[in-house]
Image (cartoon, rainbow, N blue to C red):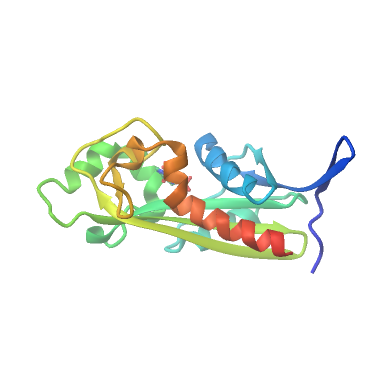
Length: 201
Ligand code: IMP
């Protein structure tokens, strides 16, 4: 296996820290900031490559992330993340159509779909496809929860004001601090796997 190509050396007095630097292809600053925070726990520096990625229609987020990465021409150590909200009652909808549904229906539209419904179980999934030279790897993170009855909170982004994680205290992700969300989020779980894997390389 090829070693990571971007080992950076930062002289700090007589101490030399060795850090790994990788890139995330995303047009979403929120996703980038959350991912950056998690990878920093592993001493990995994350840079953002501001791109409009090519997204195919597929059931599994891994497949979508892998394709988006495959068609990106770059020799940097690079990752693509695909994430979405999966509502059990609707067979996982919006899932791979999450950004389209958010754009067209918004959180109010999702709440309307579930109006008067007791079955509100849902989960967020995050899949990361990573490439460094010849090495490729895929990781998945999940958080289970339910859809709130109304929008709550202004934190996070996207569906966060209507998603209540099961491992929380009843607040939506939108009502939590970034640090609280990162303890249990789908994205943090996927990025921790990537971090653990990278430090073992
Ligand atoms: P994508 O991975 O950029 O395709 O994201 C799909 C959609 O899911 C976007 O509309 C995001 O706003 C939404 N989404 C993904 N992750 C999160 C999250 O952590 N919180 C809220 N919305 C999310």
